[in-house]
Amino acid sequence: MRFEGSRVLVTGAGAGFGEAISRRFAAEGARVLVSDIDLAAAERVTGELDGALPFELDVTDEAATQAMAAAAVEAWGGIDVVVCNAGLPHRAMPMIQMDTADFDRMWDVNVRSIFFAAKACVPHMGEGSSIVSVASIGGRRPRANLTPYNASKGAVITLTKGLAAELAPTVRVNCVTPVSAPTGFDKVAMGIDELPEKLEARVVSGIPMGRRASPDDVAAAIAYLASDDAGFLTGVALDVDGGRSIG
Ligand SMILES: NC(=O)c1ccc[n+]([C@@H]2O[C@H](COP(=O)([O-])OP(=O)(O)OC[C@H]3O[C@@H](n4cnc5c(N)ncnc54)[C@H](O)[C@@H]3O)[C@@H](O)[C@H]2O)c1
Image (cartoon, rainbow, N blue to C red; front, side):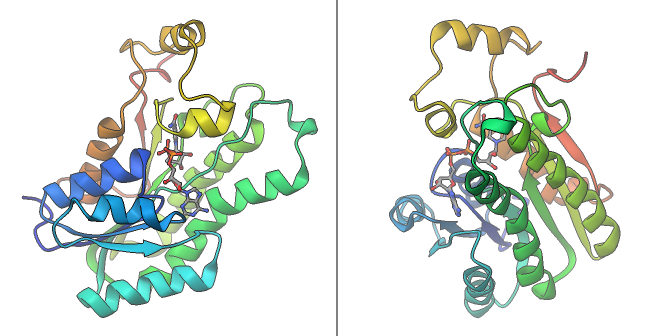
């Protein structure tokens, strides 16, 4: 098992990708701090995992992020992997129609949170440790009407590369750029539980592998980036996109 005894922190881990990421690390032997703004959701996930700890964290709260790092250090003596997964989409709309407060909130959750997590956790991370963030393929190939979200994910990619340069060789810093996946994301972005058939077909038609991403696809890629198998990889933005960005 690649993460036997490793100490792993995951944000936004009460559902969707974060839940799958937590399960994946736990299945590979890690102790996982499952944090989410929704404590009940975090507790539901930890209830099914050996040695996992739930933690209530709004990633826009710097003091709470410091408290999360402190809780991991108190319980386990240090931190090996931090997965900055929490993120907010917004309703698709022309950028100039977006409320500034919504723009700021989305930017705080998607970008500022990673700054907070790095500040809180890096002092407790040693040789061979790593940070992996969840960006989006939209951060590489933005399309109309998701401009603020895509720009925030472009910032995650740049932040990843800059931080990787700063923290090498001690801490590796990478990110994944998933294509659309059926999680609670659709509900937030569009107010629906799942994409209507026609829209689903349109999204899938742009993905050579013929389907949307799954939370397990994303969790597997993150586990790889955090593992010793990727020990020479830093500053990488790994496309988990079924080939969407090929052409
Ligand atoms: N699902 C997709 O299509 C897709 C594609 C590319 C990238 N992403 C990115 O993947 C990440 C996870 O998204 P998901 O699809 O699993 O979403 P999701 O909505 O299924 O889950 C998000 C989780 O984050 C938590 N959360 C929300 N705001 C928070 C905050 N301020 N602090 C802490 N936790 C918070 C929610 O309670 C929830 O448990 C996000 O960064 C998202 O931008 C998603």
